[in-house]
Amino acid sequence: MPLANGFLRQEDFSSEFFFELGFGVCEDCSLAQLMQNVPREKMFHSEYPFVTSSSRRMTEHFHNWADDVVRERLSAADPFVVEIGSNDGTLLQPIAALGIRHVGVDPSANVAALAQSKGINTVCRFFDEETAKDIVHKNGCADVVLAANCLCHIQDLHSLAAALEIVLKPQGVLIFEDPYLGDVIDNVAYDQIYDEHASYFCILSVKNWLSPPGFEIVDIQPQNVHGGSMRYVVARTGAHAVTPRVSVLEQWERRRGLHLLETYRQFALDVNRSRELLLAMLERLNKEGCRVVGYAATSKSTTVLNYCGISSALLEFISDTTPMKHGKFSPGMHIPVRPHEDFQARYPDYALLFAWNHAEEIINNERAFNDAGKHWIRYVPKVEAF
Ligand code: JHZ
Image (tube, rainbow, N blue to C red; front, top):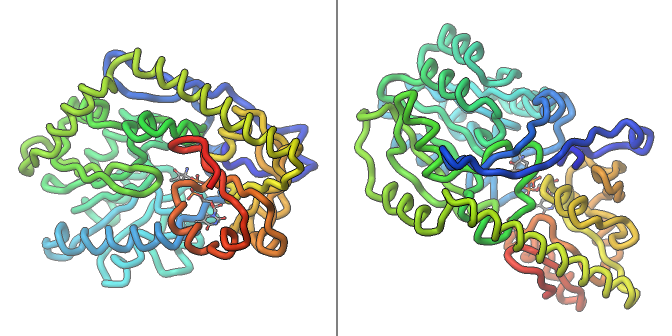
């Protein structure tokens, strides 16, 4: 597999980086994880092409979350908030606008600069123990540490726990959100598996990871974004009351077998079947002479295109709204990425929805596409055209 966000120019095809994408689960701690990690500097750098605010729905989601944090968690005098993986500052923006002390941490210089340009205090580096010490030295410890779709990107979870011990106040909370393993398995959302996502969390694995260093999950809140995410509220053991929701979900995970190898063997069969069905549909449409275009050059699309072997013979181009991706080619399969205007200028017969997680927002924005008698193709939770 190539890098999920490794959109590249033609002159860079010959030096493209590949690695073996393997997905496994630890029978001791239940952590679903990549079997081989890519060096972090290869993925997060000064040309990181994903910008959080690329979805209006996600921007609303993050602003609502920030409002909840301000209302429920920042009653201390002169509170201080840290965000790990702050990208363009979308989540911190409402907090910064209230004059609350904050710092965002992100290793990708281009997105960190976007946040800085909006007045969000941002340090451009990886979050680890050294970064935590520096933050505490300059600002004191944090009341709240936030992380949105970020902790699953951090490969060394033990070092991360040590950094959290350094940065959090005794009564402080870590609130993080990541795609939920239960939804990945249930919806056969295998495209969530790619280089950046080192871990695929559930209650069972988060508990096993964070209990030894002295933390516990005090609350969980399922989120209807990115195809099913989980928000975990974590505190030092005994510091806050634990809601019954945590054990209810843990029991469901055991019944669902998220700790059992046989669950993942079945998942592998389901993933294989999904590939067969999608390829069969694309090949049939190709034979019938239909034009098919990809919609949104997501990180997830890299897994689907390369795993299924979908080339530009089956997919004319991929439409995307991110200027940094335009004129480049998709990682591995080298399908051209073009501006959204090219999609609108001449509708294809079918659009393969790589951003199925934003389906509601996109289908609503593109009503004219369906009205013109054109069709979407989706492959999560099942392969279908509509
Ligand atoms: P989207 C990213 O994954 C990367 P991706 C990251 N690794 C992660 O963990 C998840 O987010 C959470 C385009 N788009 O949000 C813009 C349109 O073209 O599913 C972006 O290129 N039109 C941090 O990349 C891409 O989709 C639209 O109307 O899978 C973003 O895709 C919309 C809404 C998006 O994330």
